[in-house]
Image (tube, rainbow, N blue to C red; front, side, top):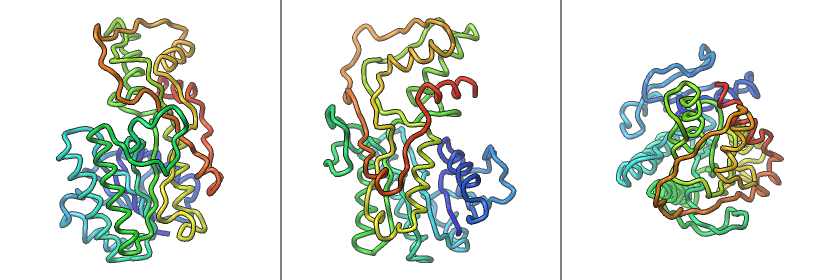
Length: 307
């Protein structure tokens, strides 16, 4: 089985590679599309690495066509920036990938990684996949547009596409552009004497945090499902813990792990949180694939600090 992973050098991509190598080393032939030749952080001797930018089709079209993948996990994308850049990268880049792959293999299984950002402020109840899109950020707008594009390719061209919507990822190697990565980074700086407290914009909102190692297992459970074409294609799946945790609780967990207390510095006039809470309803993926998250948030934070 030939598997193509885009964005393989990123935070999630590296864990995706590790998971497939561990769970299906004999059944898969891995190809990675990356922007530059980087250390994937794993034994890449048996991995075919393609350098290319999805916005420059001439850089990757021939290479991907020669691979002729049976499965695609589309992780590449932009999660910060202005709307124009987000739309070009997340929508046009996805279209270029789909056009290239489907011309070569119309039966290819494709998993698009979207985001819970498409839901926006959906209230305090667990969020199911069938609620309307209500994005409140430019990133959320771009992922909504990406999903609409994929739905069109499925309905009009019969493409075998499913969508995964991860909630707030955490885990070893996460950058400080994400809230848990930011907190862990600042705690380490405190221990090194480089700062005196944790600076955050707010700590009262609730988030559904899911360990990246659980998330990639969820992605693979969808894409490798024996009846993918019959029961996964055309559907979206939440990937979350099914629980809500406030950011203040994240700090308390870290204090329990380190045995230290940390000062938290907030703005004198904090801005109103657009999304006060999010909690995933994960019953759909649990029913169809039997996947469930296994790593508690406190364990994720412990591993982040050690990493």
